[in-house]
Image 1: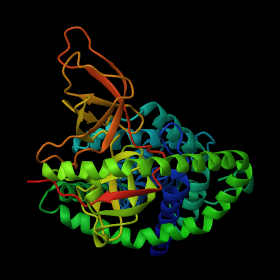
Image 2: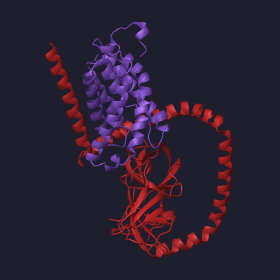
Image 3: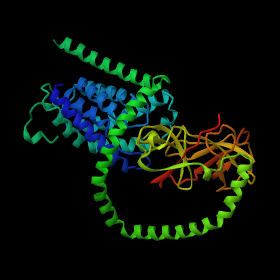
Image 4: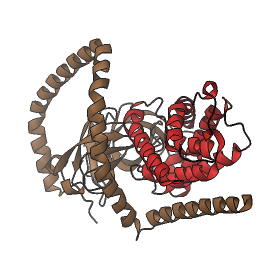
Length: 178
Length: 278
């Protein structure tokens, strides 16, 4: 990742953190709220592959760890694994397929939340598995499908200098929805 | 070429995973926990004003639309609140004499009386920041006299306990959190004891370690116990009984309880500067 991309990614992480901690926390449905954090490594991995996904996942997770009451480093670990997994699993898929982003966002976010809760419980925070998983899965999954589009737009801007690579390559205007 | 790129990628991911695990170990280790706590404290000092700034810009816009769409219900709610305040004022005057008597009795028994303990009033700036914990964040921290372990009361009862304290903010674990356990007494002469367990933010709390067939009533209040070394001062309303039954052969009564405090109305709370007896 170039220095310019790093600065832009930092700015995107900051914007998403602020939106999450202000607007998203107010949108509680059935005791759960949307989780924008996981969309950062997912979109980075879809746009630029597993390595960038893991790097963005680690740093965005670390930024969220600073303000969450959960164990420090846990979001960074899950974000890193998520970015790498999404990048590796979607490597063979056509990056411009319309189904790819929503499916990766929903499955990735829900999977990351499950991993986050289980690892938290292993680390002694047993209360993390005492939540209504049905509402968490529904709210996080559905909101991720909707919110992946603007987050992907931001991440595309942040990683614009990266030459590699998957859906960052110039595309014809009619297929450049996101 | 492709192989070297692949090995570089693998190395990057391994380094990041090791870094994450190291941070978790530092946080979990009692001796190095202060390091991660210090980092979080500094980050919170920077982050809180920024977040407040964002809220100050966008809240009036949200409030404008919310007020416009819900004008009727807001007006009705305001009238209900005015009526409740009137009733509470009358009740407060009536209770003055009883309180002074209670204060004298508790002083004679060397028990702390909640209203004689120093408190710090704090505003809730953040609630349920994670889907997996029931916590709120207050705008007061160590510099304002708020420390880890202090009980938090408000909205009609015990709200929770401070679990993290930074320079100017503190995190409170609510009584509904899965990790929360509060020793309680109940009954006409507070002769029964139990433990109120949080079951997570979306599940009802339970009262455990209560003997089978203990007489109970729906709506019966449970208060913090006055046992030595208890984590809370005695007499704070914790929960009210919602339902109860004893299954055949069970070693304890199954009791579901509701929090005494209205946890949806936590704009302001009081942090009680109370340290349990060692």
